[in-house]
Image (cartoon, rainbow, N blue to C red; front, side, top):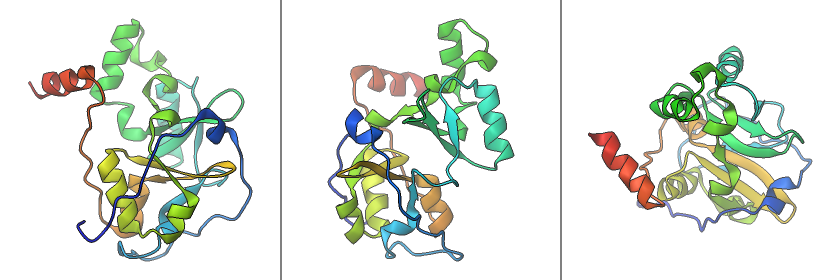
Length: 197
């Protein structure tokens, strides 16, 4: 990754997340691309019909069913006003964290809702559409690796434009992004240490 550069990323505000856009989606390539290709190949437009949307009030059992039926490994989580509020990876539905969360809430795992497991949009790194225009797939991968996030938001002056998911990069290039957890609080550090025991 030494030949690719991390893009300057930042968190997004609620105002940036609420704006909607209308324009065409970049078509998915038929063959594997290398990391030197334009980054737009891995961006999924938020208004794309291809992107699965799940309400945050949906139970994890129902979410798992929808993800399996649609053959998807991730989804955008929306609120009651159909605004994107988070992202959900299929793998987190049955991981240790989901069972711990259900225990803490004193409910059965099947009753746990997607809102508890999603990664909120405000916690995701974001770059501008202008940065995206000159970036390569490798730059996006380096940025995701630097931020330690499976997701990267693309924003412009009107708000949220699209999203890059590490699994999409894998599907398009055949290469995965090595992500390392980043602690943002003492509690995060404690959880990593405790988990390794």
